[in-house]
Length: 461
Ligand SMILES: *[C@@H]1O[C@H](CO)[C@@H](O)[C@H](O)[C@H]1NC(C)=O
Ligand SMILES: *[C@@H]1O[C@H](CO)[C@@H](O)[C@H](O)[C@H]1NC(C)=O
Image 1: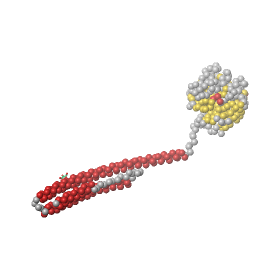
Image 2 (image 1 turned 90 degrees about the horizontal axis):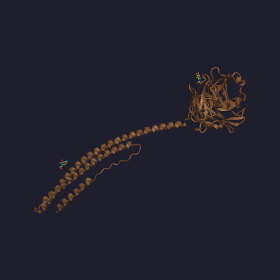
Image 3 (image 1 turned 135 degrees about the vertical axis):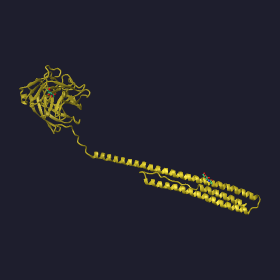
C-alpha cells in the first residue's frame, strides 16, 4: 500500500519538477532608443548584449535539458527502488498484480517523458540555430542601419558646413559697404548744376523785335572750319514755323548782324519737314527740331541738306497740345524740346498716356536718327517753362516773375533720381524765355527771350 502511494507521489513530484524546469527560463533583451547624433558606442554595446543574450539562450537550453535529464534519472532510480520493494513484499496475490500494473503505467509515462525530452532537445537545438541566425541577421541589419545613419550624419554635417559658409558670406556681404554705383561712362567732369550766372550776352538780333519766338546757339560738335560759328533761327511764320537756318562766323558778327549764311530747309513755310516750335538745336552740323505737323524729330543735315526723321512714341503731343507754360500763359507750340549735352542730342516731350508728364529720349545719330530708351519723369510739362540737359541730367525751369526764372527741377537720366527743390534762380532781361539749351562745349545756356539772344554761364559743383 505504502509503496503504491510513494510511487504516485514520486511520479507527481517528477512531473512538477519537469514542468517547472521547462517554464523556468526566459531572456529579455532591452533596446534603448538612441538619441542624436547616432550613438555608435551604444550600438556596439547592443550588439554585445545581443550576442550575450544568444549565448544565454543556449546556456538556458542546456541547463533546462540537464534538469530534465536529472529528473528522469532520479525517477528511474526511484522506480528501481519501487520494483525491489515490490519484489520483497510479494504476496503472490492480487496486490502484486495491481502493483505491477502501476509500475507498467509508470514506465509508459517515463517513456513519454523521454520522448518529450527528445522533442524538447530537438526543438531547442533548432530554436538555438534559429535564434542565432536571427541574431546574425539583426546584427547585419544594425550594421547597415549604422552605415545608413552614418551617411546621413555625414550628409547633414556637409549641409551644415555649406549653410555655415553661406551664412558667413551673407554676413560679410551685409557688413561690407555696398560698392558705389558706377554710372555709365560720361565725358562729364563736373557735378550737378549749382548756379546760373549772367546774362553774358544780351543782344537784339538782326531781325529786331520782328520775331518774338526763335532760338540760337552754337554747335557743340561743329564741322571742321565752323568752330566759332553761331546759328540763329527766328520763327518767321506765325511765331511757330521756320524754313531756314542763319549762321554767323562769330558772336560779334551775330551781334552786329553782318555776313550771315542762310541754309534753306524748304522753299515754303510751313511745309513738310520745316521747323515747328522754337526749341531747336544744332549738333554735328545737323539741325534737330520738331517736324511740321507731326510727332516726329527731324534732322536736317547741313552738308547734304537732307532731312531724316524719327517718330516719337504714338500719341505724343504736338500742335500745342502739351506746351511749356507758367501761370500766366503757355509758350505756343513748345510740345517738343530738343536739347544737347555732353553725350549728344535729347528730346523732351509728353503724351496723354503719360498724363502730360515729361518723357525723355536720347536721339542717337546714325544714317537715320533713332530714339534711345524712353525715360519717364514726374515733371508735369505744363508746370515748366523749359528744359535743358547737362551731363545726362534734365533740368527744368519755371517762371518766378518778370525778372526771374528758376531752375527748380532735375532728373538724372542714369539713376532716375529726381529733385524738385533746386531753387537756382537767374536774372531775365525780358519777360519770357521761349527756348533754352545747354552747350557742353562752352558750358553756356543759350536762351531766346522775346526777340533777344541771351546767354548765361552754367556753374557746376
Ligand atoms: C529523438 O528524435 C529524433 C528526431 O525526431 C528521432 O529521430 C529519434 O528516434 C528520437 N529518439 C528517441 C529515443 O525517441
Ligand atoms: C550729313 O551728310 C554727310 C554727307 O552725306 C555725311 O557725311 C554726314 O555723316 C551726315 N551727318 C549726319 C549727322 O548724318
